Image (cartoon, rainbow, N blue to C red; front, side, top):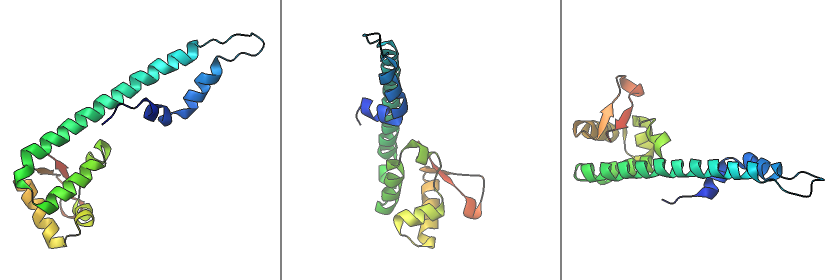
Length: 140
């Protein structure tokens, strides 16, 4: 993980270019950098906040694997690592049997067995819905 100001600028290039241009007033012979400085400080604060959230997610991920490493077989670990690699917004969606099967390449029966085993071990929590719409969330 790295703190990245440039990633934050990339997220809102339009505001960056606007802030750069705001201080240029033709005919005055001077530059007023106030708007750019305000933009810079707000962007710096946003970048730090994003880095803080990213660090919290990484700590949760690492703690998850420390807690459950002995309860996972290779296939289960692969699926969960791939899910976590996609970041918190993807993890928040949970995982269903179809996505698990796609990531793992396992059969339907193996997928069902894996998901039930992970739920029984406390690694995953099952949604209220059943059947095809069942979603599992990481217990982290």
